[in-house]
Length: 297
Image 1 (cartoon, rainbow, N blue to C red):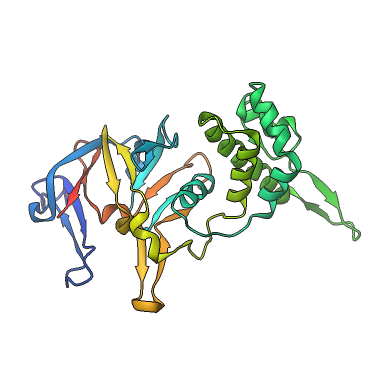
Image 2 (image 1 turned 30 degrees about the horizontal axis):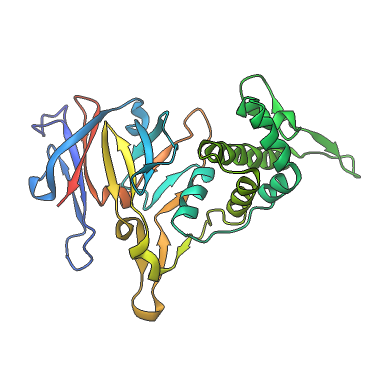
């Protein structure tokens, strides 16, 4: 369209209607944006990787307070093709726990906490670099920069060689996830017992692929969640990040956060889907290679 001179402005924009009683589902505009669909001005952040219009997201807040998640920056994209807000499983588990969403138990995670939890805390207390904790206790092989699978193999009775790479990876990933949780608890100066209880609770309440449910009666008492993008705080209220399905006694509510672990080099990556884009009108600027957000109207 740009090459053919069909658009005056080299931008496209999204408005996703969140009002179920309104007949218009939403609008995509090629070559501009409709001022009727946003309030105030857009805050722009530059694209750091062109593949998916990727940008950097800063701190993540719950109830206006920093969680320490993404405080050093996280890669993110805005994607109208994703219904929810997706992020790394360990982080989403922490968020869902804070908003009271139910989940499913993770066997490897529980085994790591029960078998190695106290030792892991002691290693972190002794200022062992977090990236080395899981290799120190033998749950991850360590290559000097990151946790990697050893790719251990065994031979079956029939002489076939099979890999236990996946099992090793699952335990290693669970260990690294628990280390991240423990680090966040250290920041808040929690006791060893409190820390173990917290990480064990998360292990029993991991994000469910079928959706993590929230008690609809408690939505009004939940805290807001916020993203820091381009130096501005973008806040979502509970009614914006909780999806209510059905009415009356058959209604059920689902967390707007889901887990998606995208491996390097593309990931880890946050995906701000329709839950976010419904609240914030989104502009993709082709000339300036930037993405802008303003409150939807």
